[in-house]
Length: 503
Image (cartoon, rainbow, N blue to C red):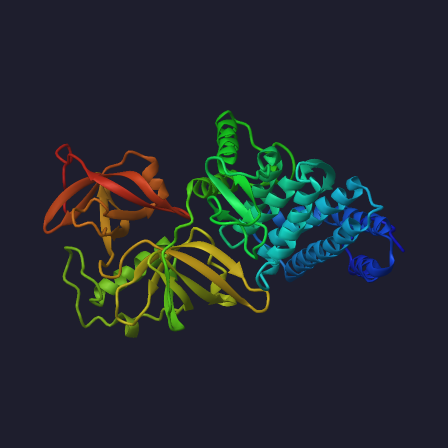
């Protein structure tokens, strides 16, 4: 079969690669297992060498600039998925052949797990076409467990770089990538996460018994990682979260010392903000539990949405003028100001899919999905004429079989306690109008403001006018942070040194 040249940048080269793949896959029933393993390794090496530069060009920038790049991303994801499917068949054939030694079978198994992880990772570009086949991944883990291969180390070439990892580490790498590919991380952030996982491969050891905080993989299930020890009988493998948290803290220490982790490779070219975001997500996962608010059945309905701090603040100001929510102590707005009739504002409608006490699952069309990224601030209006509810995007999953995106959002305010725009002044005059979010605690301890994050980087004090009086406040604890904004608590401070001038 032709194998000339590693370059897969052209349509002709990719078509040739696909023909070679098809020939190998069709020959599985009639070809000796050892030969199949060699051909599988050759396909793996050719895809790795031929796509390394293209992957870097797509993963390092923040945006995909052309339709051709997006199409190439889908092609890469499909090849990894197909190689993992081929690898499963070859590994099972090698395991059934008593003449095959452990080492080549373990190498084929390692490559299969690598491609399972890569296929999951590249779904952020290709979109998720359906539920993942966890059963196939768990079947490989059961085989490794039975043969005593979990701690067997294999040498691999990933993006033209030599790597060494155990079968157990590669298995948990694929499961952790799956855990985060549900939309919690961007394309660049998932690449940083993967770089961390390769660095931490020694902490991805598969254990038979739980010790400390753990996640588990139930080997007879069709689902991914779960928290805690298994209740009842059944084979499972455990992953120590304490060990991973220690490695996460090591990375933070390295950053404080001025070192980027990892120092080389694709992730080292990605901006530091992506590394920080990944470390924050990992902290939540390593210290969380699996308890979630129960889902509530909902009728599919359209929800009006506004995105970003400026747009959300603006719609709240318009709402006050229309009398939708209580206004601050300013000039009394005219209730006849029907802003829906006066302002030509574009409407962005999302579809409600699911709901819980803590948030919602929404669906967006391609035109509205562009600005929906993890960390974006949203205001949602579920019924005309009602106050908006503040929310934050926590996951985005593009659907492969269409032009729609599933968006998970976390609730930040309560509809019964309407938000309001609130002008904040400094000693030098008006700083801006931001969002006051009343808390559900009657004492006011949960009250907060949504402000640009830059305001929290200084010790500036602000004046706010309520009921004809001026109060001084300073921001303290950050309760939630997103793309350029923060939900911050505050404390009252002494305003006596100020010369208060009411505009």
